[in-house]
Every structure is written in C-alpha cells, then in structure tokens.
Length: 120
Image (tube, rainbow, N blue to C red; front, side, top):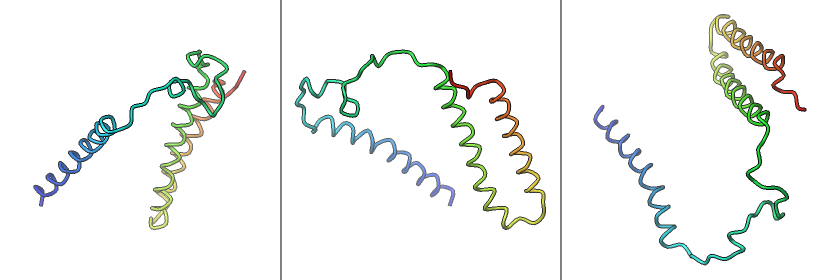
C-alpha cells in the first residue's frame, strides 16, 4: 500500500515537471517565427504608453497589496471553520474563532493607526 502511494506520487511529480517543459520546448520549436516591429512594440490596452514603464512606484502600492493578501488569506480560514462549526459540540470552537477574529481586529487597528492605508 505504501509503495503504491509513493510510486503514484512520483509519477504525478514527474508528469508535473515533464509536461510543461515539453510543451514549452515544442512551442518554441514548432511555433511560427515571423518577427516584426509591430510585434516587438509595447502594447497595453490598445493605447501607446504615456510614461516609461520603469518609473518608481510609491511603497504604499506594495504595502496595500501585501496587507490585502495577508487579510485575505486569514479570512479564508473562516470557511473551514464555518463548515466544522455546524458539527461541533460546545462553544470551544466559537471561543477560538473570537480569539482569531480579535487578533485580526488588533492587526487591522495597528495598520490603521500606523497610517498604512492612508493615501496622499
């Protein structure tokens, strides 16, 4: 049983490594190659770019993005809890979730007090 599981896992991992590489190589070898100035020009939504793409952005953009990902992932933990809460017996899970949401609220309060979500 254990050997079958390991063998099937190795097969899946090998296929996961081989198939994308083979497709990339085949696409490169068999794909059409007709370079032109139009294909190498910068294209964004059908409009010529107004500014250089290498300009610097404010750190606020990255900070808000990271905060969104952090809070989004943490809120995603609410779904499994909600499913298990129906079948749970007692209020221990409810207390654990209030602790979790309290930690989230403290983190959000800290972020707001630090001014991380303010735009200037």
